Amino acid sequence: MSTVDLYEELEQMVRGEIIKMPREEFRDRCDEDDRFVYLSVARKIAKLNRFTLHVHEDELEFVCPPPSKF
Image (cartoon, rainbow, N blue to C red; front, side, top):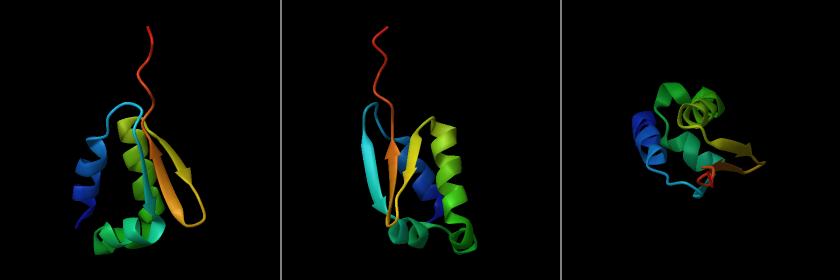
C-alpha cells in the first residue's frame, strides 16, 4: 500500500460513513517516508475531504458528516 492508496480509499467514503483504523495499520500503509508523519497525513486526508478526524490512543476514526437536510 501507499499513501496515495489511502487518499483514494478514504476519498470513496459516503456521507454518514465512519471508518475506524488502528493507528499502526494506518502508519504501515503509508509510504516509508510518511511513516514518521502519519498523523499529519491523516489530518491532511481529513481536511481535503472535509471529514472529522478523531485520534484515539490506538485508533484513527474518520467521520464523513451525514448529508444535510436542506
